[in-house]
Amino acid sequence: MKKQRRNELLLQIIAEKLVRLRCERGLSQEIMYEDTEIHMGRVERGEYNLTLSTLAELCDYYHVSMHDFFNDIPNP
Image (cartoon, rainbow, N blue to C red):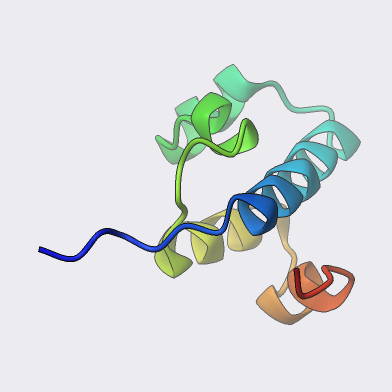
């Protein structure tokens, strides 16, 4: 079985952006879990290799398009 690919730098950049979005909206990780059933602690520490489906769900929750989410993220 192939090892899952993991870009640590990209995961950290995405994690930091998700923390920023959550904090800008005044939400706790607990509220996020109650609303989405996504454990934000692991995501926000960059420990969880997000799927596109999970990221799309978070973008929908934050009312941000995937395009806008990635717009200011550099290609590491």
